[in-house]
Amino acid sequence: MSGHHIMRRHPRPTGPRRRPVIALLSALIVICCAGCVRFPAPESPPPIAFAANPTPPGAQTNVPREPVPDSQSCNATQSLRPGPMPVPGQMPIRSTMADIIDRGRLIVGLDIGSNLFSFRDPITGDIQGFDVDLARAIAKALFDDASSIEYRVLSSAERTQALRDHSVDVVIKTMSITCDRLRDVAFSSPYYTAYQRILATRNSSIDGVDDLAGKRVCAARGSTSIGRLQSIAPRARLVTTTTWADCLVMMQQGQVDVVSTDDAILAGLAEQDPWVQLVGPGLGEEYYGVGLPKGQDDMVRFVNGVLEQLRADGGWQQMYDRWLSILGPGNGPPQPIYRD
Image 1 (spheres, rainbow, N blue to C red):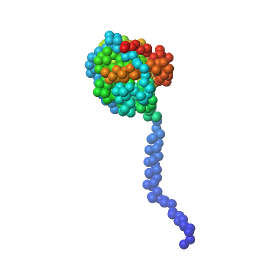
Image 2: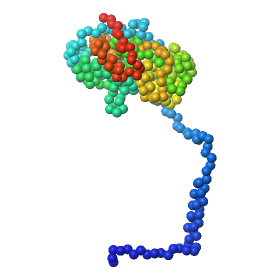
Image 3: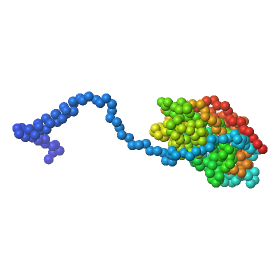
Image 4: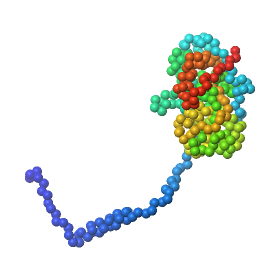
């Protein structure tokens, strides 16, 4: 046979054999035409059922009474005067700093969810922020290597215990200096002054503390914000969470009405959501200090020496301009008050 195929022509069906096909085509035409009929659209779309938004783990509504933060009655912001700074890598024998040098790294307790102060960059994965730059400055003064750091993530409620059991060398985590905390830990001189405020959605009717009666107000456990809120807004309904990021999530989900804490922390939350804003005047001052284990006076003086250098050489202002300029030009670093 040749390579050509023979095309055979079959006779077209006629008569009764075509009737089923015609009937099928007629039915399809009826169906298609029925689909062309226009019905009036409803005035509004039907409601869509959503599953309930999950509450962040650890969120609590039964909040016990806490003391109002106090840094005045005991002169809490006074700290030990720094001495001459040793050469990096050459710490005094048997000092706390020498022990850290021998270990080979500074162990820093902080948070990775406090935008602007300490957070993980979503692109690089690096931990960065104002508090991180301060930790790197301390490591640089110890080792002459700003990267000789081990970070340990702590919630606000875990900070004091981490210093008491010496699982960290320092806590640099927007930790306010108060008389209550000084019973358990030591502090450097203040490195930042914050003011407690309120974060609300842009369409909220809440403009200040007078509007908080009956409203759900979120704060992270272990923060001084709770005691102040309970004092000045006793009819507010407090909700506490493990982290400040959880407070933002709960506000986005409509589970709380506002968040209240220091303006610097709230500004970091507002950076993550354009539909929220800071409202109302300041509710009280907070002085952030580097937390240290009690009894390590040499390390307190050393850290205060690092802070002195940052104030003197413009390093503090560079850190502020890099991370906190969203808060305005600022008033510069807080000035220390020393005791010998």
